[in-house]
Length: 211
Image 1 (tube, one colour):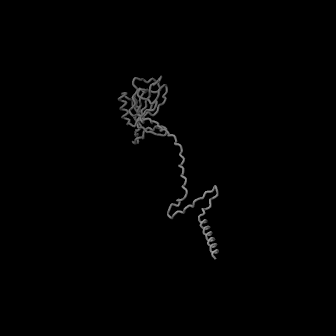
Image 2 (cartoon, helix red, strand yellow):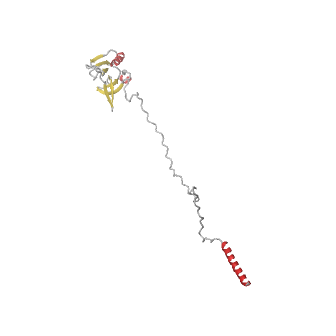
Image 3 (cartoon, one colour):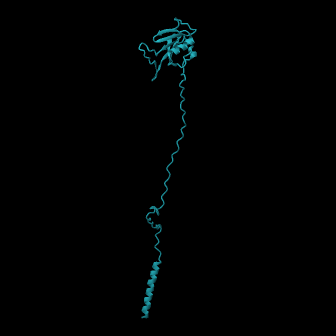
């Protein structure tokens, strides 16, 4: 009886020892070359769903394009003054007579025999222009009354029909004359390119040969 009891106690002790040894055995070691991945915790409600995830790679900044070379500022072309005379415009010295103040040079023509004819326009009244040339040249011959036209000879120059096509002179014509109808005309029309200009009084200057 005592012998059976001792055997039972030995067997029971072995079982207990076996259980203790099994509970203290460490988990199996993974094979060489493999690592054990820790479990990823689930996010808490309301927390950042990306918590516990590996950090995202930073987004590289956008590629920068090389700056374009600065364009130097362009200087606008200088516009000529409105009252500046174009190249070749006749003046008092080249004509040998004063031009009515403010008159606009229109054009010139070859009058023949070395003479040239120059046209000027102004919106000054006809009588004002006539008064100016009566003071400068004295005298004056009325060529027409309707429309009014007056001619002044240039001083110191005599007309010679053998060598001249026209008498060197200043002729003033009224282009605002009303005529029989009594209505004022709109003036002499001068077309410059696509622009039409009107002048109430026209001044014609004929220079002597070679002038």
